[in-house]
Length: 608
Ligand SMILES: Nc1ncnc2c1ncn2[C@@H]1O[C@H](COP(=O)(O)OP(=O)(O)OP(=O)(O)O)[C@@H](O)[C@H]1O
Ligand SMILES: [Mg+2]
Image (cartoon, rainbow, N blue to C red; front, side, top):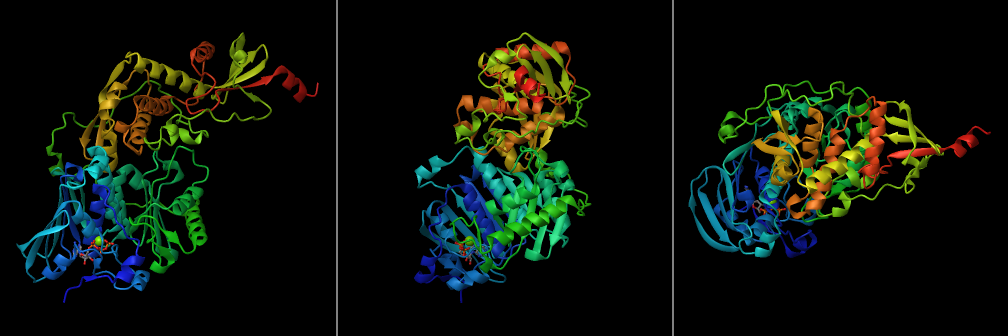
């Protein structure tokens, strides 16, 4: 007798139904979940044409009998639950019996499958119609091929974004699946090119996570990860220490019972533990938790991505505390050798012209640069360059001026810096002090330079006068494959902004040239690139102006040195430059550039 049953209507009706396949990544997620549910320990994935042409998932799991195979594409047909109550002891990713049905409705689908010792069969379904059932080789396992996705729903096809973007989402799905299912080997190809090859764990959980993290997040982050465990919730986590925060917030993974989630509750709990972190630096982490299926509900959204916890506060408190303890105390980085992040030799067949620099000797300018420290609080919208669909977040209003120590933040009263003024010196290599006719003026030298550079860069771009500086040795940036795809969306446009980048491998990008008005340290240039790669959304769909501002803001922020001595001539010149700016009162992120203390205020303070 077959394993798959059609759920009774009363059960089906209570399950969050209405799976809508919106994009290729959604298809891949469902197919990978099915393969893992079927007990596979090897999964081969092929993606062509960003998933629109082909998504093929081959597994060596249980396979299906002929009877089950034909039932598998019927709505509400599942082998995973029978009653609604079964959801309380769910140990599979799937439970609705909807995924294959939904995929079959919008693609040309074929499934070949064979059980151990059984005969192999293949079904073909097009646009939801069963076309044929025929014999196939009896190799245990299942191969699902989804071709021409959305061929019969042009509106959905049109809704898809660029190939790079869709590929980035597809690879993200693989990255999550590989981190959640360590016992499974994965081989992933896009358009015939091997992107990832994850070997199955030999039983050592920590080693395998770090190995996989090394491939996904990059070896540098992976070796810094602190490992933490706690009996409660079967908690196992890998976290970057406060000293190793990254420029982006998307190297973050939560898994509950192996299910990848994007939970605000969980994220806020972890961020609370990183209290004191510079606002634009983010932790990378991989957090695994287990809890009885009855303690959380995945059934609140058809895509099974959101959860609701029965005890929201308890989970929040636990996660915050355990993370905090790990960061402040005993936990140690995991001491493991990482396999290099570059893919196996076989993958390098495509021809990238430039060799990787042995030791990048790009030594940009300033020699005695103190650790860049540009992370004072900034307006919320500014650095969280979030979504291109939301231009507002790129164009922050100047932050509400803060009044500190009785000093005035200059806003609309430029008379303070119109001169005459006299440079008195600097404070902490950060603030320039001037005497003016009205009293005392302090200028945040970093913010001031950022503003000047920002406007100069935008102007030069506007007037096509940007000078380009080719780098003698390209700077290499290692990124998750999904982020590389994201970054490649920017490639052509970035050229008009003076940055020349190219893909070196599925997980490495080279920077070949930068605008010559910037003085990047190598690390800062890498951070700039990583930040761009982490921006959510499709730059192709956003206005030129928005892109210019976004890139200018990020580049200026990353390229300016913090804390350096400033000569009198430089201090004078900086004020002159500021005056020429359209908004010399604020840095590009909206923070004030200067504060003042009038002679009258000083008199009052001294009780004269
Ligand atoms: N790769 C596979 N190997 C073995 N059986 C499979 C595979 N893919 C699907 N099946 C069978 O087909 C059934 C239907 O799959 P489908 O993904 O549509 O539903 P589901 O996994 O049960 O629930 P959900 O809709 O939540 O994913 C599964 O319950 C399973 O029995
Ligand atoms: Mg499924």
